[in-house]
Amino acid sequence: MHAATGGRGKRARIEIIPLIDIIFFLLATFIMVSLSMTKNQGVNVALPTAGTAASLGDQQELEKALTLTVNEKGEVFWNKEKITTAQLPMRLQTFKAASKDPKVVLNSDGKADFEKVVGLLDEVRRAGIAKVGINTEKR
Image (cartoon, rainbow, N blue to C red; front, top):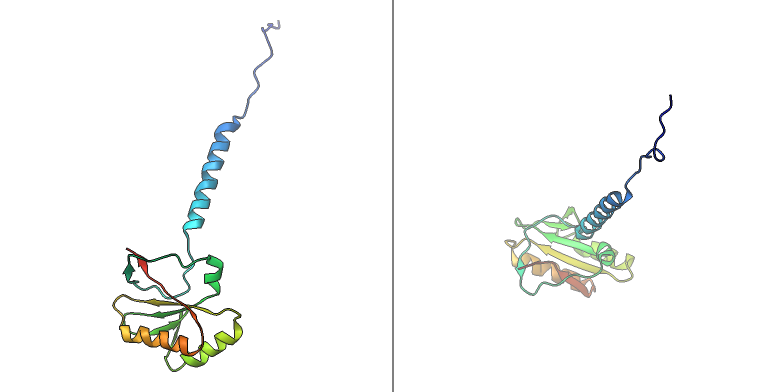
């Protein structure tokens, strides 16, 4: 015999609200992580700290900027390529000629020889590049 039921049989349902919550959480996490990542074109050094350090500006503009780095040993790096100070003037002239609005960011280890950093700054200015930033960490 066939037993009669009081209503239709229950169908399985997929609960969408918890799924939407998880998706939004993952999306928000992904966005926060991607915003906190910065592209460092130079060699990693222990930057000096400054209480008045400010943001260098738009990330796309920084990617076009040249990064000159002086490490603790006094070695000079063009982005991540080690160069000599004798190569610097010619490379700066080439960089200036190839870029409409040349920008240079100076990275220096906190324990690097200050005279070396000032020498780099002087070479950049001698090449006619006016937009120069010195990278520091905020205290």
